[in-house]
Image (cartoon, rainbow, N blue to C red; front, side, top):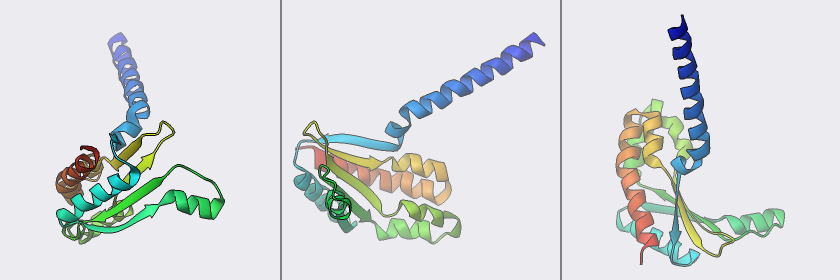
Length: 160
């Protein structure tokens, strides 16, 4: 009886520790953030060039700070979101009904923004983790080609 109680207590304690770790580190697991040595505009241009050079489509660059100022009258530091799509990768996922809910994460986005420390940052989703969560074709595409391409685009934008 005592062994069972110790086992259950250990199991509960382990679950609490794991849950705490996920809450504590969750955002850094889901989103990668890297400092850029360039301006926001230069960083966006580098991402765009790298993506287009690999056959990705740049669907647009959203200037969130402008929308916020126009819509709410609130001034925030520059935040640009580069929306990217690779038609072949998207097609593999969207042709399967079971995978279509993942479209909520499409297009792939890379954010470029300035913080109050004066530095420019690049943030992207952890596509590999996202792929593992959904499994199947999503894991194959997001965890492979998409994650690798995002890493190349961010590296191209953040290295001189």
